[in-house]
Image (cartoon, rainbow, N blue to C red):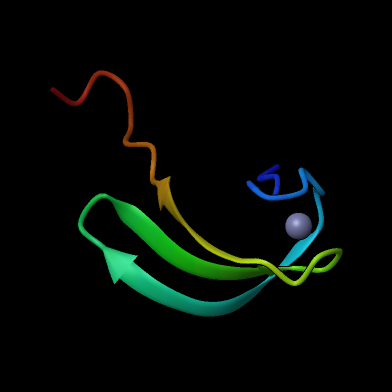
Length: 50
Ligand SMILES: [Zn+2]
């Protein structure tokens, strides 16, 4: 779970999503304080493929 960097609330909604070479970039808005922040969620690759 990703917490708001401003108030620490764990609930946020995604307003924008972009594909990223390293994963998913997401623009989020906190449900509690309305603060906007973005996250990059990395996609895990299969182990043992390297
Ligand atoms: Zn917040």
